[in-house]
Image 1 (cartoon, helix red, strand yellow):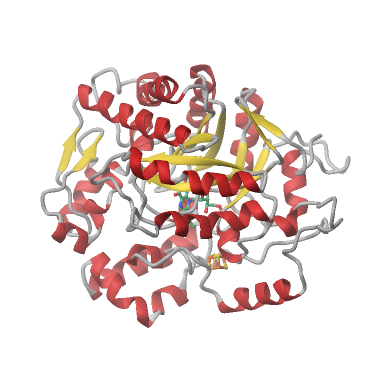
Image 2 (cartoon, rainbow, N blue to C red):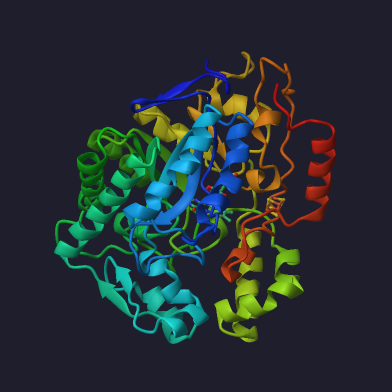
Length: 452
Ligand SMILES: Cc1cc2nc3c(=O)[nH]c(=O)nc-3n(C[C@H](O)[C@H](O)[C@H](O)COP(=O)(O)O)c2cc1C
Ligand code: SF4
């Protein structure tokens, strides 16, 4: 059975080991410091030995579609060409970097961010279909605001072409692969999901038709970016909300079938993720972030985002309820990944609540004969732990030169989510829990993040 240190091929690209940094919003924007911000965020992981860096979601269009403030747009070839400085830095350390492509659709800031809406009153949300009644009810109650523009068939092809164009620019800038944001309630999931997709053209109606958008995106990428590997997050909308609130959603079996069909289309790897139809904590499970909501310096930003103190308190209350539902169960996508892996022969990447080296070995099937359970995945990914420890790879991977990496190592991140809510206010994605940062300082001083 492979170990974390063994290489893996994703399509035509060899990844030097099986540890990846899962995508996390960098909030780097497109300004003059964007490339430096991305380098500062992503290079430490590569320098610590991580085999694959998945850059956080970037938007394929020049206007609208951002799920959060400060997302980087990749519609402009001039801008994307500057990202070669980032890809060069990652390659200097022997790592690989994939760019994640996305459009928020009904999840865009033009739906939920009060100040952004005021500043861009003419922006409509791109919609796969008319918003479901649950979202219209939230609109009527004043929590969300919709001016949806339902894509015509021709416009769906145009949007897919934008994914292809951005992939072409990324390939030119030295990216090693493309990652499609398919399971964070953005427009790709909205095409896949029966909750959102009620179309009656070739992009809706049957499970296969709901997958057609990803098939056309794939063709566009192949046409414009050659043989670059393409992978996608695959959603199963299993956890919530329950019936009768939501009856039409993707089951685990549906998610497995989507992964199987993606392989047939030509996708080179899949990342199965149990998620929700709503914009909740299902993809980043953990505790209610007390400290983040109480942070005085962020109150103004929260008020601007959520539309005043009352709505802010309601969002915080909803967040508290979600934290009860979405407990950070270890490796919560393990079963979904294992079920997908039984049905496909392309690599399966697992992420979500993976926190210990021993657990990683077990997921990869390298449990030194202690267990006959088949492997759940071919690579293991961590996201928030890289906010807490940007050079985490050095602690998790065996290093021939230094001979380090204890097998019982556990990451410092406590899944407390203090890093998540501030991003709604445009604050950068960093670990904000002092006890964790204090322990990182101790490890730094002890040389735990040095590589030989
Ligand atoms: C602040 C934050 C931003 C995220 N941004 C992205 C993103 O841009 N694209 C994506 O596919 N997933 C995103 N995710 C989900 C992560 O990739 C990952 O699946 C999730 O955090 C669970 O892994 P973890 O428990 O190791 O953090 C984000 C998660 C968090 C907490
Ligand atoms: S604030 Fe720090 S410890 Fe808490 S979830 Fe984020 S990275 Fe992990």
